[in-house]
Image (cartoon, rainbow, N blue to C red; front, top):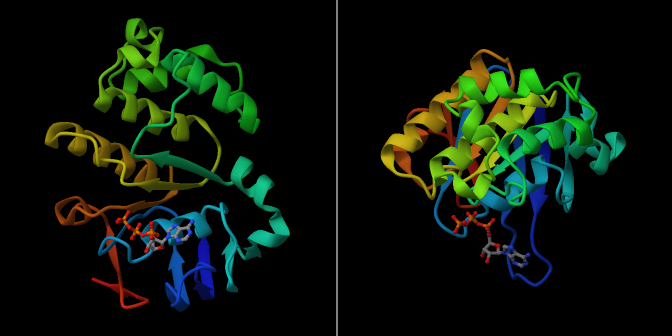
Length: 218
Ligand SMILES: Nc1ncnc2c1ncn2[C@@H]1O[C@H](COP(=O)(O)OP(=O)(O)OP(=O)(O)O)[C@@H](O)[C@H]1O
């Protein structure tokens, strides 16, 4: 689904490249973990495959087409959804409205379907009462589940998450990983998460380590 070809990146103010000539493939139906030391470039790599930044050289392709050709705005709207450590929900809205809003913005096939959004939230353990409360009234674990439900209600087939369990306790971490697995295995999406927690990575289908400017399968 996502292929990088000779992907190379550095920040203009840095002395060295972060990574060089990276050739990787991420397939639908799988949950991937990217690990590596702090500062090695994991978030930067994620931002390249999410279309938030552009490579210095080499390419990122989505289903055989270069992101540049798809158009980064179009790619971010239609093809990829993101989950962050800090949830990034619209805090003045309810969980339900966060989902309805995401579907409307991305033009998802269930746009406007409240029943669908509520059933999805119910499936991830947010009942109707909680779904209609402002998201800031929910716990961190619940807010992260809402953020994940938001990716589930959109039609994008690629999901990236940066340290999605970084703020969560063990029980919420396990819930969140189970949801990512469901998204990959049941919705046949491709999910890539960045984590510094090896026990989180071990629960994924595939682990890729960024070390000394290269990515290696663990
Ligand atoms: N916008 C930027 N401009 C310049 N340098 C940056 C920028 N963003 C990140 N860096 C630097 O690039 C390197 C890689 O950063 P990145 O956040 O990708 O690493 P990371 O592996 O995700 O780190 P962590 O695990 O600590 O979050 C770091 O040295 C960082 O300081």
